Length: 253
Image (cartoon, rainbow, N blue to C red; front, side, top):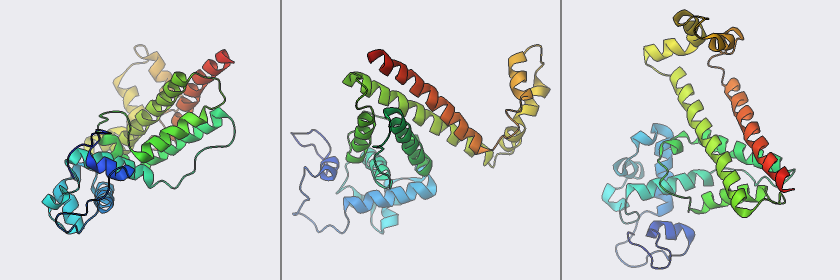
């Protein structure tokens, strides 16, 4: 399955997903399918994280040999790209099509955050280029259509969508790391996180860190480990991002 098509320049496995390459009918009988491999890889990542993923581990999940996977994929990197798209394909959600542009784009960001929380291993796969797979492009299309009727230039629509998705991805990674810290088996981490506010007061003086102590005194860290508070932070940040986009829309209007 390795090799590029002269028309798209994409790997053969990508073309197969897009339906622009026919499934091979010649050669050794194939006991697997590309879809089965991707689904098995997603299951492994869900259970063991992206660090537990290897071609050998996926092959074991399928009861096959690692070499047999290379009939369908040229590299592990191809598999990772297909897994991201497959994860988005598992989302049972509809396009945000009702309400104002702001409400639609807000819902779009919420869907993306939910995807990262359901498949946190996606965030651990390095971004190597622009999205090119079917489910990813469909999701990007939804984001762009959410800005329909705003009067923004097409470049500005794309920039606005990239701004929202950059914030959502960064927040998902940060909140995921915080959640992992609370669940950590490391005794130092497990001890520090729930007592963060008290530690700040013990390690610093009010004279040196008046602003930080004001935050502690306000009880901001009292509910450390309460992830509803993190949702509030997401909402706060997203609203500020949307405020900026709204200013741009108003300027065009």
